[in-house]
Image (cartoon, rainbow, N blue to C red; front, side, top):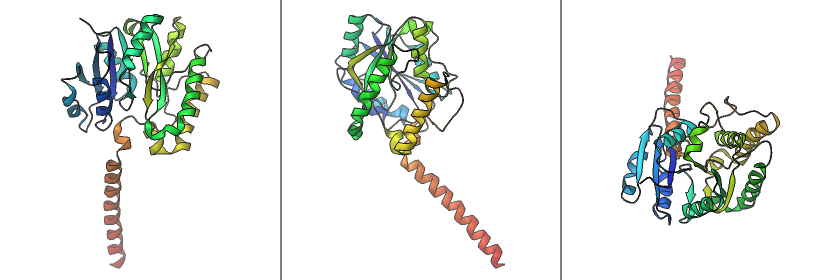
Length: 274
């Protein structure tokens, strides 16, 4: 018997964050779901870290050469057996009643596309008011010509998702917003599930700083709102993968640079001395 939900998680070097989300999924009150992880050939222990969850979750792991969030989500949807696809980022967190509340809302409203309520992770609770305003804006946008989504978290009926062609893999960013917009063109409007909350990681902001982080979101949103265009070209740096936030990798790069810089420096001193 096919499950009601398929939870799809795209990953790339997420050994530190993925286990936290998988732990959240193992304690869900709603048990009628499967998990599909689509991995971009991680170089860390992402694949190994799921082994301890295999007894508690019905889970499948697929690898793809396409290190692209949209492509990895589409691959998960292609392999999915669930009636509804639940897209979550690897660094997201959900409470134990998340899927139960989503299912209750689906049964009540009979929709095809749902958006959960987004909250900041515990480390950044001071941003809760800002997130509340963002949720209000996204909810209101569902009645406007230009619609928005909330990060990578959304729930879509599987057959409808496939009918409209899934996420647009040609886009640089904002593929989730574009899918919401395209769904509306088919007459399907997103329904907001305020009871089901998803924690959004602000690790990118921690890495880049507040100004740079919010600047990128402002530019991307402004281009969609005022220029009425989806973003296909690389307009700023926006790398996928947990390795971006790995301080040990940063240290290794610095040590590598310093090592060869010192070698060159020593060679130049020797040449000048001769």
